[in-house]
Figure (cartoon, rainbow, N blue to C red):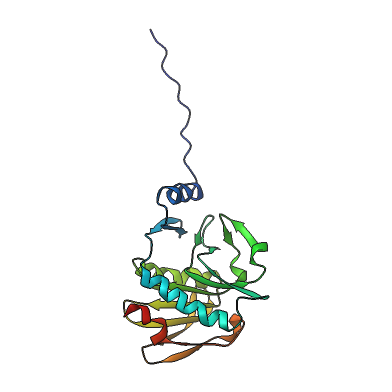
Length: 198
């Protein structure tokens, strides 16, 4: 008679460990944990990257990438909604000392974020429906959405109780100013922001 093999309990990876494994397997994909669920977004197309560059130029020209703030792409934002939740906005304006506010998993305290930007692509519903709630809940003062599908730019401000109280929608042919709370006056043209869509 042979002895039966004794197996110990199988250890399940944490959400953060699972997200890291997915990141290693799907190089170039954006992996986030929002609402306790892992979301994976494939690499963006070229026009998506052009929109980010077109946004970075006026932010830099306004002096937002300097001694008091930095303009950073794809930086992790720790979210208060769950024990492992984090997002990776396309572009952010953060306090210059953001590196001193690392929480976990290359993600930083939401208190250092002045502005987050999402440019819609295959993750459209997350950018326009889910992220406004989680970014407002995190207290991000300004959320800018470049909606390439509907050719508009939305600026959401005044986060309270998990929602942005002010939604300003801007259409082609219009220009708009970002709130000076981001650290400097910045005026953007919808046509310039959406130029890569054409």
